[in-house]
Length: 251
Length: 326
Image (cartoon, rainbow over all chains, first blue to last red; front, side):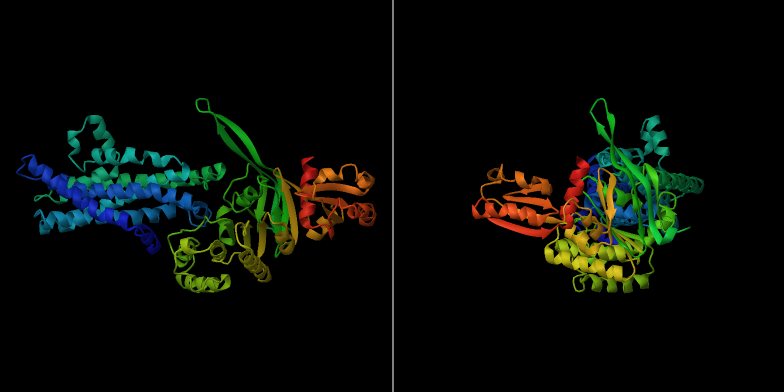
């Protein structure tokens, strides 16, 4: 695992991006809201949402480009040919990616609390940490799912940009999902991180709606497990597919 | 899991077809038969070589045996285990390297590379530490393990590849062109490492373009062309199968044309000829008769140099490939 972390921090530029981007986005979100004349700042969707967006971007790009880097370095064949399943390898990488991306979120929280006087009621802290853990679990499951595509297709990296902002929009990071058209709301329900983010938002409320919170937690866990189990079975089929085409060493 | 007659690799009519997609609007699949039916077996403790021209199917064969590719048809077993059905049982018992600079994380240190791959092979942490230390010494990289792989020379990278392939102490090792792109000193060190591995009881399947290398190292050699084995024997036996026991190399400063009409009397003694630059190589089983005919040409300065030598494995290989192509 520590080798995985070292690989992700090799580039000071990319590591700096993970650190500075959420701070910049959070600040921009806050000042845009103030400039629009809002007296009550929706911290969830301006600042916290920026942090979660940073987490999503980190996970998405590292999941896709990790494997592309493996193809370029010629190590993908060695990974597939090892006794450890590609599912396990990608699961550990996705975990490292989520942990790295969560620094974006934590930094947003620090900015919100230290600069913009945001606070979490002390009684909410346990619910906040549980919601955060469940949200990160959701991210992890989605990350493993996404990471399999570069194994199969050399062109899958082209679609990364199509996923970053649209997923960020329909999962409710930047504004409530209820503002979206019905069809987009239905799409949002298929993604565990939408539910996870709702759980996180609910944990900040002064008067927590516990039935709603439990619904968000259990739905996040349930849909995440569906992704995880589905990816596990898909992984076996993908392994055989790539052993037929023999494209592991081509970029 | 039966191992037949101490053969740990058994390959029966292995075939592999790839599909090349052509066209933009109407995409058509064109089959490319990389391996058209290869059969051979390798004994325990043997160093078995596979040679052949580019595109012959050597690397594809190695990749099928190391479970990276699924064969289109045919069967291959390693330690009595099917490479298709028993993949998870085969992988922990084999190691493999592919030639070239790829296959390592260049921005990590040699040590981190080895640690990562050791974890992939599910080695215990204390074994990882001990094994890495041993292997770094064996491959001669002690003292450089904390440097990034991108700072290593090609020879050092290839040695690190070998160390990586040996981490889990496999019984069988596939080496695909291990000395390609390596300087002569580095290549010699790698060949010595390979010999040491055989002394330790490993079984090795090696592919190479360098005939002197396979001649030096291999117990038996399979010559592969167009996806088929066209010759298989020990280096010594292959040399006796050659069209000529002797090679007479003639240097002609004015080119082969100056010899036109002058070699007709010796044609009956020649089995084949080969031209390279200003040197004409004559293959013959009757060297004395050929030399008698060539002597006057030497006096007339039509030929400036004659060299007589026994056919090398490279000569035999070229002969076999040419005959197969014909």
